[in-house]
Image (cartoon, rainbow, N blue to C red; front, side, top):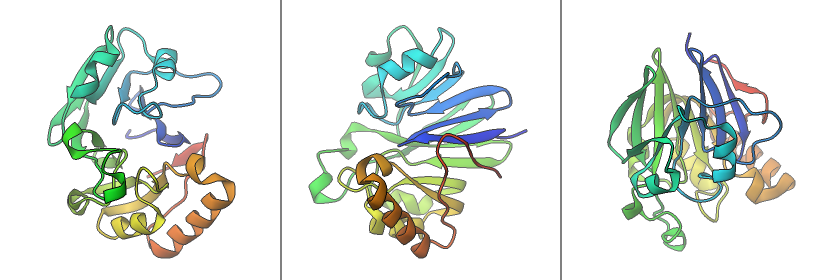
Length: 217
């Protein structure tokens, strides 16, 4: 079985189960009872993506954590794999492609500089591919991405705004594309407006529900 469920936990945070393994991506503001993690993927060291309080809640000594190399030192005492764009890894049978995530818009260049080597991930199990973009702009590398489900930021300020996310969605090859990293930034009304605009501009666009199984293949 591939991807028993995929749950959006809010912001850029996800939980899924793959063949009995519990996997988190960028755990942040975890609510209620939390399941212990077998694997944690971290895209970059900003507090809303690498949050030590949340990691401590779900990590055990055997949890494997993938994180950009500049942040390995933040996770001393854990089973850490430092990663960089362009690498391929395999974790508990999941194939992991590490892809770049960075800003190109002038006003955002200092937020996620390309030189930092921060990342997104394409995680493949039993032929199903999920792409989590991390914090990125509409970069050239997006044109080479293919996935069953693509998760793209659209909150503006630090990442793409809704118009840029719509443009990027037209270049990413995916069965379904969902926006992330926006509700905390845009508020309730701004988020609803952005969602409507996104769905109007992206034929294969979907809106995920938070804190419930959000997607099925």
